[in-house]
Image (cartoon, rainbow, N blue to C red; front, side, top):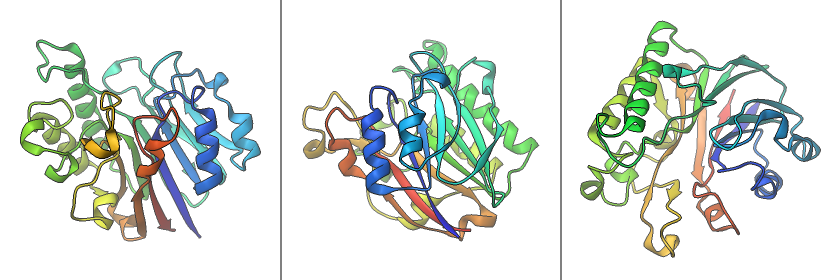
Length: 262
């Protein structure tokens, strides 16, 4: 049975409850992974989502920041939640579907504004988090798994609006890209979005600071859908729903989707 999976940094699930509901009604993915929920688990408005056909949820939450959740039409069970780099942050949740596929939902630290771990503690935390992810995947090599989320790194030149201008900007610096690549290699993860859309500029995030984000189009592809090599060939129909960024009072991220025939 094919299933469609979506990932979306919602930037407060309670503030944007109606946007999530609209997305579920209009797009109807089988699984929706949310990041930056900014809510304790018991405050996530799961009743409305259940009424829309998403009765299953696993989540980790914090008041006011971070937080990850997986909503699903399909039965699932929790399959772990790691506190990588011992930050005490709710940044990871995993769920196992009935077909045995494990879905990992990550919210990697943004890293602050200065790409120097000595001058910026948050940047060091980001690199440490990615290193811990790498080591975890080395120790326990994933199989039949999907990894999604806001990884807060745009790795390719065509994942940003201007490669040269952003080389010293957090999210596209060489050291971040290298850390991401090492983590990806450790799990033998395949970038499904770029497997399906191999060329061309592609973004999933546009800053609130841009008064006309659509026309300026200074975006970055921070949100990712990956899969292990044993199931990557079953993926197709990848897309970024750019128009959702233009909804009223939106998140600064757009949803990213892919379908898997598994």
